[in-house]
Length: 189
Image 1 (cartoon, rainbow, N blue to C red):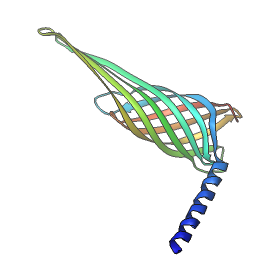
Image 2 (cartoon, one colour; image 1 turned 30 degrees about the vertical axis):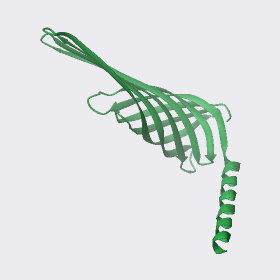
Image 3 (cartoon, rainbow, N blue to C red; image 1 turned 90 degrees about the horizontal axis):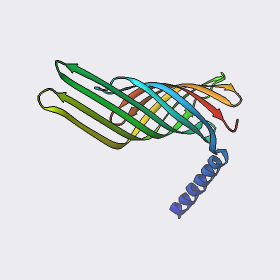
Image 4 (cartoon, rainbow, N blue to C red; image 1 turned 90 degrees about the vertical axis):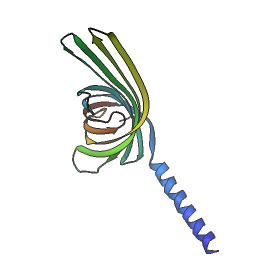
């Protein structure tokens, strides 16, 4: 009898909690914008620029925002020494989802922390030019699911425009750290 009463009580509380969250949720296509930044992948890849598209998907609660993104970076470089030449090329296309907790403040600048998942489509290719053996080239690609953590600040620039600065650490293959500037045009201010 006690278990049944406890189960009913927990069920009612869970329904009330989820109903309250659903009433506070405002999910949908709220805004779209761009992101430009600098990323530093793990060695041996040098730092490079990242370009991306950001989509504001609304809020689950007033302080918890959802965001979708597509980012791309690539890096190519080469070396030569006494007839030997080597060229490398790396790239990563990331499709991600992020949940950001907007820290309540009294100022116009809103700090946030968050995290999410990414689908990384990483590719690399290399070519060696050997004066004795000729050309040797190869390429490789892989698709990984990675995690990322973010932190930064956002500010309303106008009723329909929001700007921000963000730092992100992505755990994938290869891991990378990045610093980004974002501009989002809000469709529903």
